[in-house]
Length: 153
Image (cartoon, rainbow, N blue to C red; front, top):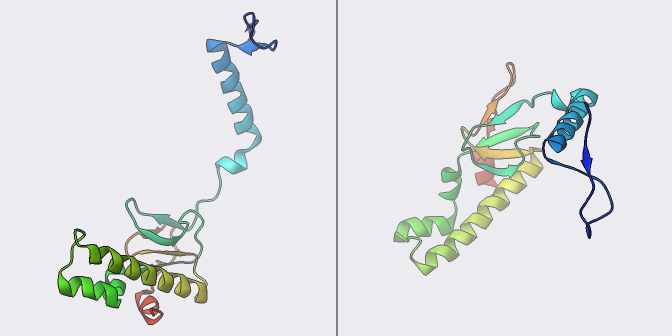
């Protein structure tokens, strides 16, 4: 294969540049070289867990999770006083007070999740049903809803 090059027009840099189809051929050759030299990176081991499409993750990275757990956020939120006030008063996102209360409830929720994950050495916390084992023989993630509730302040 012969690569033709074109000299730049007057006023452009003095270097050579590849044009059109020739550039595509060089790019494909470079890609094939990378594929041949690094097969380990391409055929890497699949992780033990996969995030279900649309699954909600509260803490961690699903691609590198080794010790995941799941929680039921609705049950946790119902134990937070600010969230219960929203429910009791029937507040909606059109009420100013709703946003203040929801912010406090969300902060308490996340703090409880972080504390639980740190104390139990877990690297991923997601909603129930969001994480599935990617391989046979891998245990399903444990439900830690009660552990988060016990750590709420």
